[in-house]
Image 1 (tube, rainbow, N blue to C red):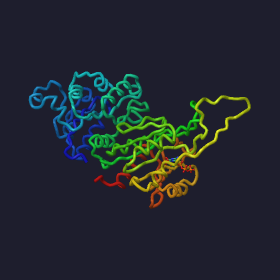
Image 2 (image 1 turned 135 degrees about the vertical axis):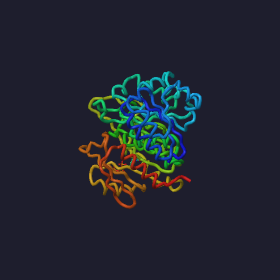
Image 3 (image 1 turned 90 degrees about the vertical axis):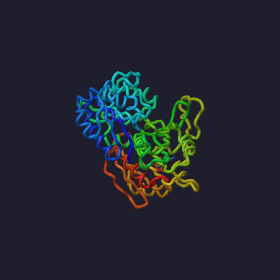
Image 4 (image 1 turned 90 degrees about the horizontal axis):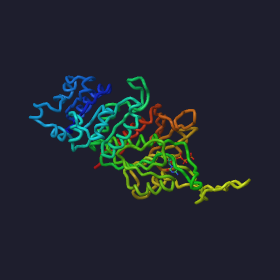
Length: 400
Ligand code: CTP
């Protein structure tokens, strides 16, 4: 809920501006008040009348509006909110912010504000990928600006890829998280993610095909519900979520140390594809080929990090969630794995190559709890993460 929270919503110029009308509705439904600011370009996509009618407040458009300046100057306007949200945040507006320009109402408010700022970028794929945009994003993140999205998908311009503005409900979740107001507020949750690399020698290692996409989505979804997330990740292909504590590790042994250091937590989700074995005889120097002789690699079992936490006698997290990557008899194997490891839930996925799940954008999972097996329909990893985060929030209940 966002009761009595004040949001200053800056609507930039992009086709996604139409979604901001729905965003206003969603924010107001949750009890927030929304003060809208429409840029000149934004007004090409949505009308000031529809924005102010939905917000129930005057829409601000002009830096030199004398009436408003007399009643409430732009400085005050920028500081009277609990959160400034920019949706859509265009490449231009982000460039101005990163460069410290203030030549219209929106950019002036963004420079004058002392409240947290959340951007929902929206632009063409190429514009998003452009070195200038990426440079600006790095700068803005360093400045403490929060981001939600963009998502991958079909774009209004006919191209496909990253650049689509986050959906209104995703922005609402990010607003709740930024205001620390989600159902997981006050909860500390550990997430492990990605593969581990087990060294053979300083240049070679044993690894697996985990991209870390599902783990990152879970970390992001938990943070969006207000949790304080400790995200322990092996060398993954995808970037870690924003706004969480990220601890990067290489091997299973490093991951074990990082997990131990992160405890105690309220819940722990073990989404990492931890290597089961490491090379017991890892060499400190690069192994050389010697004619006819193959290296004698002895393997040793890694500690089972999940089982260790699930079976803690003292200080066990209230909820311990493991993953199972199976290729046959998914539900039966995962049910046995839940018992064997002592965790509360297992999220089981079929990683047979024909499913395209490992390294792909979608997942089809079976959730194994004490009550049995639930087949979830195939959906994006992002949606699996959101549903799982909702379930975790329900299972933990509100923090005391
Ligand atoms: N896991 C872990 N530490 C390990 C191995 C696995 O924490 N050393 C966790 C994973 O993060 C995942 C779960 O255990 O949550 C499932 O691991 P998996 O390797 O699929 O199960 P195994 O017990 O190795 O069973 P199998 O032999 O069927 O692969």
